Structure formats: structure tokens, C-alpha cells
Image 1: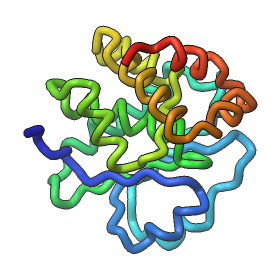
Image 2: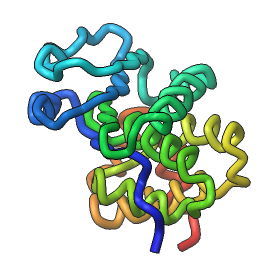
Image 3: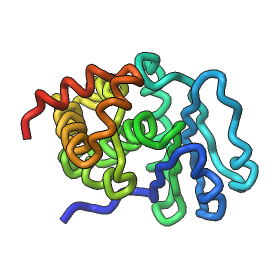
Image 4: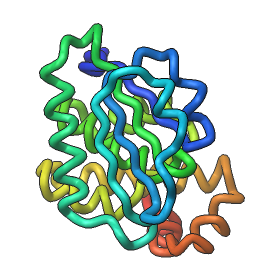
Length: 187
């Protein structure tokens, strides 16, 4: 049996934000496209710590974005577990947000194997397709010896099996590299 995560977690897309106003969120990681306005829903969240990052999904994430995400994760671990609640969102709640969640989990629970982290993430967001570029930066920073990447590729393969429509959607969104890697992944 694996230990529970050190804080509560939620992942969603922008349109789902109003559903979480009363959830007791203490920390928000908001990942928006560069020109997208700040969502009005944050006005209903009450007091919370918010990190807002702005970058596109396909090829724009940079190492400094990953560093900022991991710093937020380190801050969360210092909160009382019964009080801390992290909400991570991006546009659709599929890629940038789930990559962020996976790397925060990997940092918070370094002894938990990557497949177990991915299972935990899937329980939080079943349509997860974590951004590979972000995970590549996190992999180096967290020294997971390729385990996060391998797990992400297996997850892509799984998602293409249960959600075949994602193939064209990901290719159209500039994520063909991830689709090809999923097709070549073992397991």
C-alpha cells in the first residue's frame, strides 16, 4: 500500500474552475496561454496562493516553468496535510496541468515508483496526457532515471487505446512527437 499524497489535489480545465470555488483550495497553479485573460472564477475562490504561468502547450514550456512549478510543490509540502489543497488547471485540464501534477507528486513522494504516481494522477484526472517536454525537464531535475518519461509514454499508449480521438487532436495540436513515441512504447 502506498502512502497518501501529502496534500489534496484537483486538476481541471478553465471551464471547470467555477465547480471548485467551494472546495477549500489553498494553492492554485494556473497555466494559461499567453494572451488568455485571467479567469473570473478566481474571484470566488477565497484566499489562496496562486502561481500563474503563461505558455503554449506544444513547444513553449521552458526549464524555468518547471522550476517554478516544483517550487510551488515544495511550499505545499510545508503546509498541514489536512489543510493544503492544490488545484492545477490549464486550458483543458489534460496536458500542462497533468504534467505539473505528476512532477509535483514525484517530488513530494520520491520513493513512490513512477507507475504508481501515474495511477494516482489518473484517479485525479482520468483523461491525463502529461506534456512530454515539461516531463523531460522535470525528469532531469528530479533525477528519476527516465521513469517519468517511460511512464508517460505508456500512459499515452493507454489513452490512445481508450480515447482514440486523441491521436488526431494531439497531432493537430503540435504533439505528433508524443503520439509517435506512444506507438513505439512498450507495455
